[in-house]
Image (cartoon, rainbow over all chains, first blue to last red; front, side):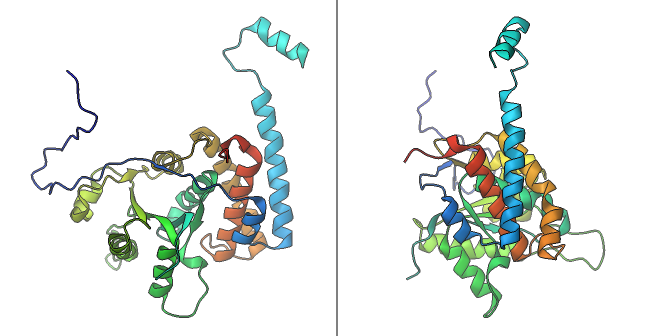
Length: 86
Length: 207
């Protein structure tokens, strides 16, 4: 049985007044802020700026380590090849 | 006529209590990861009536999130339900009805069908159910908004872990223990957004 794309299921609730607000994700097209815009939007002290930068660098190191690791599903010989290539 | 709202800004209508702080941090992290700017009533400078300042903030935001999960009756006989969140949701609905193209609002809840009991006039509005967890907030934010390129929920959870663990050092720097203070809010937003810029460059849309 084919179902038309615009078909809407209305729950069998006697108190339901027929208003339907379907949950549909909203696509955001406006570009995200640049670092300069961030500084203007969320002003922090110089000391905080330094501390935030240190955290960012620390996390960057963690992430690159995690993302460089071979996936668990990789076969041992491929894993060895990849390690020797690195 | 108010100015056009910022297309990336989101007004967060949430309870300011200690138990909610992990979800509050998750909202900030998730929105910043999506390249959006969260806004809170506490960030507006003083002067004038608080309700007027909140209304100006709602008008300046393209979206709003109303978390009704803490509208509840506590066991203590002296406790009263929190009505700030429904009050601000009502103001937002009115604003959106008058200016339908300028604003979209979302309701967040911790349990399915709870809203039908607490505010049955909202029947027909599908709330986002976060199950009272930071992971749930991040998951539901990804369900509510999307960009052509955006971080995955596990990536957001990783960033949430870092930002949440930095909270104590932020308290030490800002001289407060209140996560909802303006200075703490600014640092949380700055850190969360900086992590997006550095770690998920692929999340940037190709414009």
